[in-house]
Length: 272
Length: 298
Image (cartoon, rainbow over all chains, first blue to last red):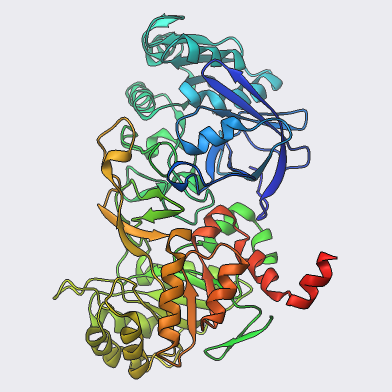
């Protein structure tokens, strides 16, 4: 894993591209520590961060690095509140504060196992950079992504060779991405699952993998104020009791550390 | 502005962290040697240590408020034994003096904590968190002058280390409480702790979840700064003790105003969540005299 500098870096936005219901924020970062797939950054717009409705946003927001290539880091945005809304407004030439890369990312599949990547909604972000690395290494893998509708499903174009499921049946498999996963695991029990998505999806992945004895690495999201272990806000209950901090113990954690991820509080540390 | 004397310690600058707002052990994992090389504070205040381990409150623990943050973290910590065995050796490696913050719900608990922590050479001072309900009365130990005085009368003789009392703002007259701390032998006071606050449940989108897992929490950030300024000034007008002023410090301006209002040190908390080097940034700005600031402008 790459270590972050203690200093936030003020970086220039190179583009902000609409992809269906999402935006891809591109930030020039040629000299930053290379992020490992699954790591994240804390982002703050350098100007007008705060002063919006209810004087928010105030705290930085956590985003998985979705891609890192040609001196640019990409972050996948969905406008769900004042923080993401402000970041969605940024255009080439605007500046952002970036702290990162932070957290623990994905680990390679265990010997003899094939990576199966499962994403839901904006949770496809860390799977994109993970797939890039798997492709670079020539590692065989499967990819399946779930979205609520066709507009969101356009996000699948950010990755390669995805099987898609949509809740409203407008594209691909009509239903849940976990139904695709179930079929996949029936065909190939020697899988190692990498999942990121909304809590109900992650919980379905976790319990399916547990039933089948398939190892799974889950990239968790939780509201956090800092990203580096200071605020203790992003906790998730663990199987052995107590809590883990998503920012420093994750965001990628082994599924067998958790009893359930259905109740994780996702999103920013605040109302959306 | 550079070196500062505080409770017999000589500190490199007047900016420290508020208790529970910077986990130096986690930060070392995240930032590596950069943490020690550019440590942002002139002293390090630990999170609150209790006699027994605490897991902390159920999530959600955070709520972004208008220009601020409501937290209900619930003081997770390994307990006294875990702190002394696991955390203290790690914290002793920091390049600055260590202040250990403790909290108990009875005088006997506080005495046990203060004695055990106070006898460790690695600890330069003890900060007492008195924002804890008394198990008998249900009132915060530090909520009124009489109960704080009674607590300190018992606790003070049990350590020779400097004793800093972290005052709660959730009281009728914080200056009277500070005066009680002074009369009973405190070496310094720190304020303000967070303001009791509640996150409105209805704001969380698309679900009927409670705003915070524990119901209420404490408000911090720029929203509380005017309260901090008023309370620091009130305490400075009443007692002669050194004061650690905190509450919504974002930059040099608030830090300077708190120092001018009578604080010896200022502490940074929520701003560190936004910028881990906030303490160092503010200390550097304070070091500049008006003269060389003017010079730089030309």
